[in-house]
Length: 456
Image (cartoon, rainbow, N blue to C red; front, side):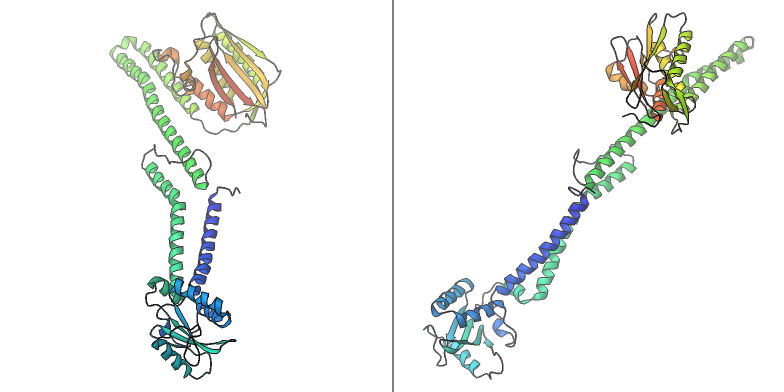
């Protein structure tokens, strides 16, 4: 499975990164909030509550830093967090020689009156007193004076675990929702496009790059290809229906006229009955060709020799062309050219191609038919000496009811289904058929695979 640029890889990486971001952000924010000083209501909390990381680190520094470093540390805490810390001795003076406010001295005395069963703490009115011990000064009382204007959100998050969990869930939900919308947007577009296509809007297409992208881009390109093929097939069926209606209208009109005349002129009834029979045969031939042109899959269960087949068809064409000066020549570079076929489909296909060449080549001209061995098969070329076909019409000559000369009568020009039947049958044989102009006329080229091979 190709991972690079695939939807699987994107989904995997997206959810993996979201998980990493959530876990990482949780760890970082927890560390951040734990490292922040407590809020203004810290002094009103239960004294038995364990201090946070900031308080523990500060208490450690108060007990272990030398006086010079301690002075700098306290100044930094006041500058950064607006927290004042006093270190009071037993006589109520500050270790660093600062003037002690009355409220600070009072809470220190109250703490000293608390029995020393464990680590006591006294808090009230934004003040918190905690006993500490220094090697150079003995037992001291650290009194923290917290500011009363701490940020509400930071303070709330730092003191509420459940609020932090709720915020993490909310943020992860927003991220996952955005990723889901981003990755399912193309599927939503595909759904809407499918609905438009189902309602008959055959021109529906999705905007997508020509190549690359993930599975949704490939799906969008496949949808566009399907919609294009569906549009072409429906338009072809509509055009075919119109052409069939047009082709059937003329012989039916002649049948009606012949029938009316036979009724009006009984003495000429035999002549009109012959005309009715002729038009009926034309209708039957047209319907037969239409059925042949729409033939679906076939089973190639017969093996024939193209050399023998084309040599016989050229002989038949020469017999039919007597008196017109037209003649066929046949050349081959191999004695046998075996291919798999179904009943007489190849016979009909090449017969139609040779009849088309016979009809369009000029009088007293040669039609060249040749077989050449190629890789994995054989190449059959039929070259006439007619007027050729305009370059923009070359692909259309294999379409149903196509006629180069629109003014040509149906009686002499056939139904325009010969090359259509030939191409469809040759494609069912795994072959390819193309048309191109030469210096002398039109060339029909047919590639057919050898048994067990395929034409590239």
